[in-house]
Amino acid sequence: MANTEQEYNEVVAVCRNIFSKKTEDYGTSWRVMRAISIVDQIYIKVQRIRNIQNLGAQKIEDEVSGEWKAIVNYGIIALIQDELIGHENWDLTKEEATTYYDKHLSETRDLMLAKNHDYGEAWRNMSQESFADLILTKILRIKQILANDGKTQVSEGTDGNFRDIINYAVFALILSQ
Figure 1 (cartoon, rainbow, N blue to C red):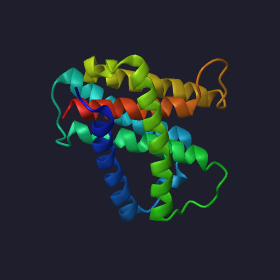
Figure 2 (cartoon, rainbow, N blue to C red):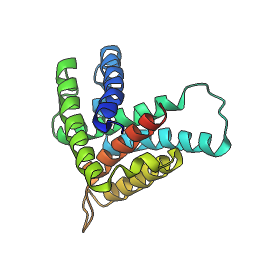
Figure 3 (cartoon, one colour):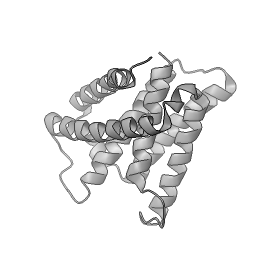
Figure 4 (cartoon, one colour):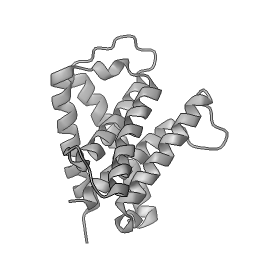
């Protein structure tokens, strides 16, 4: 039997390392992004994955796994940005940025473990295409929530959708290993 938490931790460690190195390269330039811009970045990544899946070929040699990793990181960036609404300082130290990253990653992992318990690891029998479709669905939901000024009547908010997006991308990475 696979150890989901161990596999999850291995995959997100790679994503966190990328986030950390990009923070060294670019600082926290992503702090200027509004929620809709982050949503659009994830949309671009998942749309590329879907196109490659549908066409069965790609012209740009960047690995699809890099897109899944970017989705994880943009999802966490979205959660950080939501927490920092109202903070005018766009510059975070690398330590501050990774502390926020770790906090939101931990909360997202905890959600995955709870859902994984209840759903009995159903994700292990899902296809890469389903992960892409589910992420795209969540992106469209978030766009609608943002168009409604962040208000929902009976549905979860953007944070729950971003956490699901992150977890679907991690599952895709685990299954592609």
